Image 1: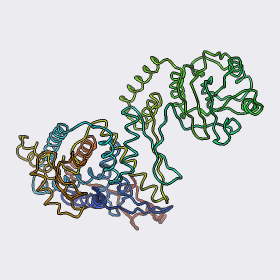
Image 2: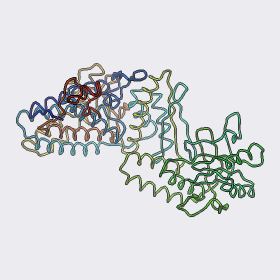
Image 3: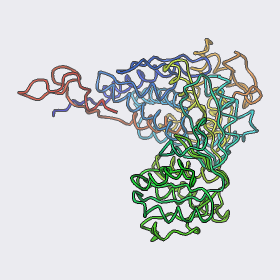
Image 4: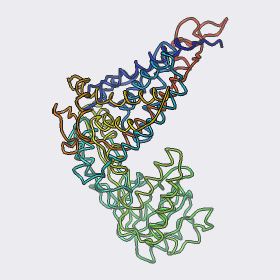
Length: 549
């Protein structure tokens, strides 16, 4: 297919148009008084949100060159969200400012490669300056303030998240779930929990609560499918001799084997419950091995060389108590060796540090949290599906910001830390076009503060000028309209989020200002349609391939 090309100033101007279109849609959400955006959905009701990355994901422009610029800034939001889960609007605003100032310099005759070098060196100095300003979290009050600010000053969300994060600590995991009830609730799980419940309701011990609760059970762990009586009979005999309940965690239990276990429960000849093993695919064996260490048993699998027919009491794990509902299982007080458990956790932490894929990192985080016994679940409800989605996005952003603050500390918030970090650039000795690149960063650093003030109804340029002359850490509180110590006012941001936003923005801006040629697919006939000569319109109304993100 033929290509359409644009060069030099024309190419950069079209790309900048796309950058501005996306950034202008996102930056109105910045700050405690930021507004919302309404996003149309092809199915279901529209989404109302002030989450930057959610808005950015929805934006596709008709003009292909401008759309490429928009997709580049979308990458800023996506990258920031992927690293820290928050700060996407700040990153977008910074990127727009750097692109604007950088292209202005290049069009005036500056060498784009030297400007890029100046941007990179300036950002490195600013990051070091931000790190020097960082303070560690002082307690649950700091956690609550971080979460409240990230949730658009919603104190209910802030309290729920601070409670959950304070409980689980750095190594624990906080998850979010949609709830059928209104409001927010925090469930603290004391022990090992996973999202698989009993296979048969005939195995419950409490019909009113529909739970199967067993004390001091023997637990069979296997990734095999159990269908025949002879496969399960050795485990049943071991449990009956020990006069203890039997819990079966297996890939699948069906047929005569399941009928035997259900019949034993119904006739009160033995107590048992069957649960589908946690995990999927290759991760299932790994998660079963985690449980085996925590429970003091062995995984019955082909790789271990242990057969179901050879099972003895030494192969089975145990715990103080297990509670199984229709959808989840909670194990309390595993009887595994603590030294082996600590070694297993250390091994998983090491794997997490080496993991590159986000899905692997999340899986390892959850496994570590299970073994440390620290898991908190925030259940989010709303009066309508639109409200539920909007609140869920704010909870997820606030949770990400809070975890980032716990990991790497906090800086003064409200755009103050970035706006005042330009002071560190005074000591950076650059000349020529590299100095121009440094000026690009210096002018862009105040942009988040300016838009926070504008969205709150104040003169952005005036606020930036005043904050520039205040002592370090003193800034503008957009919620009250007053100037003061940001830490004392509780206006704080996670250092990790601020750093990620700045670095992501600078990365894309530096690439865009060095662009000399833009190439897109040539549009034939109807814009947005895919056509072939001689066959007419093959896909009327389909999105252009170059527009698919």
